[in-house]
Length: 241
Ligand SMILES: Nc1ncnc2c1ncn2[C@@H]1O[C@H](COP(=O)(O)OP(=O)(O)O)[C@@H](O)[C@H]1O
Ligand SMILES: [Mg+2]
Image 1 (cartoon, rainbow, N blue to C red):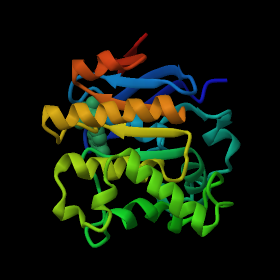
Image 2: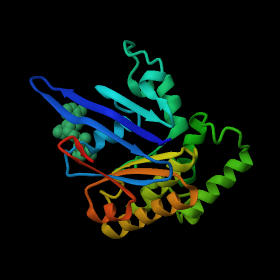
Image 3: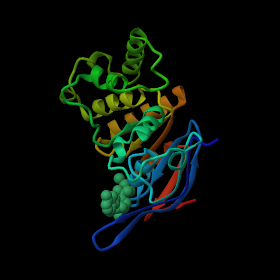
């Protein structure tokens, strides 16, 4: 069973006068453990695709299936309710148990130090893989992640005291802390110089191999595409199979 499957997924943005078809009948599968790249030029629909896989954005039609759960079919989502998609409790639960996110702009909490930023998803809510861990086990797991991303000696520092590359390392550790099986990263190296970008990529690849976490990331960088083991090409909203 594929860990992620999209079937005929459309995303149409209704603007005041025109409709924009940002994603046009996308169908593909990503298998467990893959290091998968969504590649295409700016405006081709990469973020829209990732946001739909990440349950941040609703598809206009089609199916999104995560680990066998056909999200909008199996979940009785109250589409008519006024609750924003991001706050829908069933989607939040699915997101928490299945997904970790890495953002282009890092999105760390400025008032929290490195340790606290990594710990935050564990304290915000339950995730099935970590809720049985006691405090000592959680501490050990965070120490392990800090060591893995090379930031053990920076754990007391605030994001403002870190370089861009270091901030993104914190974000990688934070994405992994709940042990979610899928990590989504929208152009994770776009705000980094090429050396730091390469290091983040190598780090993600290492984690993919060692922890068997599935990574799906978007990029328009050919070098990144070369490192991935599955490339999903998108042009003008159309996935080229
Ligand atoms: N919220 C939105 N409202 C209207 N159009 C949007 C919105 N988000 C994205 N689009 C349009 O959808 C298309 C795909 O955008 P996007 O997914 O951001 O591409 P990429 O991430 O590949 O640069 C673009 O034409 C973009 O202008
Ligand atoms: Mg984008």
